[in-house]
Structures are given as structure tokens and as C-alpha cells.
Length: 609
Ligand code: ADP
Ligand code: MG
Image 1: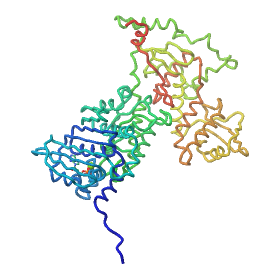
Image 2 (image 1 turned 45 degrees about the vertical axis):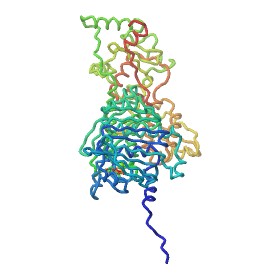
Image 3 (image 1 turned 120 degrees about the vertical axis):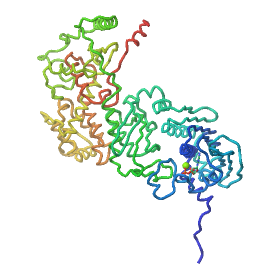
Image 4 (image 1 turned 90 degrees about the vertical axis):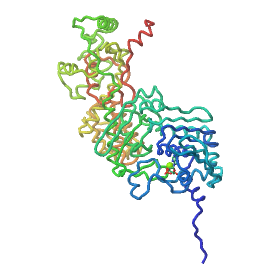
């Protein structure tokens, strides 16, 4: 009988392993930086030419290696980072597989020069396609330099898959940025064809992030911290005003290791759902700390994926940490000191403020007036071009806050930011103008109303009490077959959010009840939108997935768009509602609700500076 099976030579097994670890120049750089960080480096510099296709060089000032270790490091499964089975349960380093160096060396022209701290000389090892060509002593500072030239020179199939130098350099930049965010205490530099891609001094996370995402963007970042007995979460997250169209600015780390994980990403996106539009992504740098035994990083050779022992606990902790910050909306300015016009005061600055307030008010309707001439009175509602009671989604019915005026006033005196603003008036029947100290605050009344309605619906939904209202005259709507199928499939779920729908033969559906806040608007239009939303979500598990966007749709339909006069009471009511609303700074689509123009900005416009 013939022998068919043989053990592969090591040069070949290394090449095969390289297939998993070394995909492109950026993956080489990831492995080399991990090694530098594991070696305790405080400075890492990366140089590439032709996107790393021609040459990659990574230099560090870490603890280096002795000659023996340097030779061993190029053997497969040789590592200083774990020794025993049980060590796999307690990995504290970035590397542990002992695969990277031999894999990289097997598919390139490779040199390793290293000098161990305290050693008199360094060692240089030259390898080509996995075969050692030379080992010699050399002079060098402490640390390690690894140079990788002509990657995949002996693997033409792989070489073909490399992209242009610019694209590869882009990937390298991304990898360095991710690693740099994870270790602000380490200085990084990265050059491409001699030009700086990144030059980062040792710093703290906030400054490091500012350098990576840009100074302007970094002003929209707020810190997150949360700790329980199982997880610690820290980092920075962006306000809903700072979004990207891809996930490239979501940096998530488990125990210091950059990971791209579905569970983590889902938790982040769920936290932002309702405050940013679908298809938009926040800027996030999140560090999740877990006991090492609770997370398995040995899932994939690149170690980008992980497995959690208690997935849902981690998921919920991440979501809660982010929601805590978003709902607090710390980017809103703190309540201004109220200007009391009745008080006798002294002090130049204060008088100037009052004078400034008075001047602005001159051109505007008085704060005390409630637009009596422009505003239809009750009996005229039927003939009025719009119903003022509808403008802010009928606040009294929607928010069950049929409080007497005095009560809502007394609440506003306990001064949340919005209700403590001095109302100047309305601009273009679309914007509310207010004053806060020396700032002019402009509020988009539609965005504000929508946000209030959405948050309120969400609360009702959570307590299972969305108010439904029977339509006086049930209406029928013509749909496609697939829309009817969706309506039937989600009938019970739709009933929970206030819709009563019944098949009415063929592709006709009868709508007999709708959520109260839209019952008097155009529920049929809304139903169409909602069914289209549900169809785009697809599977049966999707209703909860779709819920937030459905609620934001209902909220959007519940408020009147475009220009509408508001009286003073309605404005005050809206501002009060804003203060009682989480996430008040942006509408459910992520558009800002308010904008501040400072006195200094105005003075600049009028060249008064
Ligand atoms: P791993 O990092 O998984 O241990 P590698 O193949 O990446 O495997 O590296 C093998 C070993 O070489 C490491 O365990 C480490 O001891 C040593 N080593 C690699 N790079 C460096 C470096 N830059 N400085 C010091 N030691 C290094
Ligand atoms: Mg390694």
C-alpha cells in the first residue's frame, strides 16, 4: 500500500498560516505594532513605501530580544506570552499565538534587528521567503526594528489581490489610528513615501482622539463611564450632531484590543437609535473591560472577533452607558441665570444685558403679549387656516399635562434649560427666538415638537399604554399584496402601538383606530409609511427592531410641518416639555433642535468688536 499522507514542511505551513494572518500590508502592521506594544514600547514608528507593497518598517523602543529569543521568535508557535493551557483563559497581551513573525517572514524579504535592554550589541536576522540567510551582530539603540520588503513576492496569487498603493496606505492609516486610540500613552508616527500620515505625541485619550477624528469633531465628544461588578466601560461618544456615513469612526476595544464585534456594534447603534438617522453612525471610542476569562479572543487568527461568555450582559452594559450620556445631553448649555426685569439691580454688565434684551424686544412682539390680533380665538377655529391647538401636537391631550397655567409656570421656574429661556418671539412662524444671558437661542419648533412627541410615545410604548383612538369614520386603504401580508403578520404588534387594522377583502385594509396623536391627521398616509418601513426590515424578529423608527414616524406625522404661528403660551408649553424630555438636543432624525448665536458673533457681524 502506498503512503499518501505526509507532514508538510514548515516553510509551507508558515505560508498557509500567513494566508490567514497576513492579508495585506495593514495586517502586517497591526501584528508588528501589537508586538511593539506587548514589548512595552513607548514610541512606535511606522514607515511604508508604495502603500507597504514595496516596504514596511516598524521601529520600537520596547524591551527588545536576546539573540536566542530573536531566532526563536521566528519559529512557528514560539511565544513569550503564554506557556500553559490555563494561560489561554487569562490573556493580558495583544499577541499569544506565536504565529505572526514566522508567517510574515515566510511571504516577504524580512529582516529583524533587535537589542535587548542591557545587552551590549544587537542582532540582525535576514530571512527571505521563510529561509534564514544571515544572522549577525549589529549596533543599534534598545528596541526592535522589523523591515518587510516585497510582501507576497513568492505568493503571486496574493499579490494580485493587493490594491493600489493609495488604498493600501489608507488601510495602514486606519490600523495605526485604531492602535493609537487604544494607547494614548504611546507616541506613534506613521509616514507613507516619506510623508507624515500621523505624528502623535504621548497624550491622553481626549487629545489623542482629537488628533484622530479632527479637532472640530472632537468638540462633539463626551465622556462615558460605567462600572458594575462585571464590566467597566469608559471612553468618548459623539453627540447626535456628529455622524458619519460608515462605521469607520466606531472604535471599540475589549481589554485594550481593537475588535469589530456584532454584539458590541449592535449595542452602540441601539443606544443611538432614535437620535440619529438610519444609515448614519456615531463617532465612538469605547473601552470595555471584562475579566479575561469572560471573553474568548482565540476565535480567529486576526483576533478581531471575540466571543463573550455573557453576551447579553455586555451588550446591555454598553447600551446603558451610552444611553446615560445621550439622555442627559451634556452638550446643552447649563441653564442661564434668569434675567429678572422687575428687579432693581446695579452693575454695568447687568444693565447692559438688560438694555440689550430690551433693544432686541423692541422689534419683536412683547413677551407679555400673546399675539391676540394674529391669532384666531377659540370660536374661529373652524375657519382659521390652521388650528393653533394642533400646532404643538395638542400638548394638553398628548402629554396629559392639563395643568393650570400657574403650575406649569412654577415648574418652569425650577428652570430646566429651555424653560428658563426668555422668549423673544417667533421668526418666520418656524423658529422660536429666545435669549439666554448674552446668547440668542434659536429653536426649530418642528424639530422640538417632534422630539417631545417621540420621547413621549416611547415612554407610553414602554409602559404598554400608547393611546389609541377610534376613527369616527373607519377608512380603507388600498395596498399591494405584500403590504397586506405585512399588515396581517404584524397586526398584533401594530395594535400595541395604537392601530386597528382589518383585512377588507382583496388588497384593501380597513383602519378603524390609530394612535391618538395622529388620529386627527392623516392616518392612512402614516399606515403606508409604516408598512413600507416594516417591509424594508424584513424578518419576523424585526418589529422590535423597527419600533423606534416607527415611533419616530408617528411622531413626525403628529406634528405640523412648515410655518405656523405659535402664541406665547404654546411656546412656553413647548419649552417646558423640552425640559421634561430626554435627548432634547436633537429631533428623532438627529437634526439639531436649537442653535445658539453669541453676542460676540453678532458684534462681529456688525463690526462692533
Ligand atoms: P506572539 O506575539 O503571538 O507571541 P509573534 O510571532 O508575533 O507571536 O512574536 C513572537 C515572539 O517574539 C513574541 O512572543 C515576543 O516574545 C517576540 N517579539 C516579537 N516582536 C517583538 C518586539 N517588537 N519586541 C520584543 N519582542 C518581540
Ligand atoms: Mg504578535
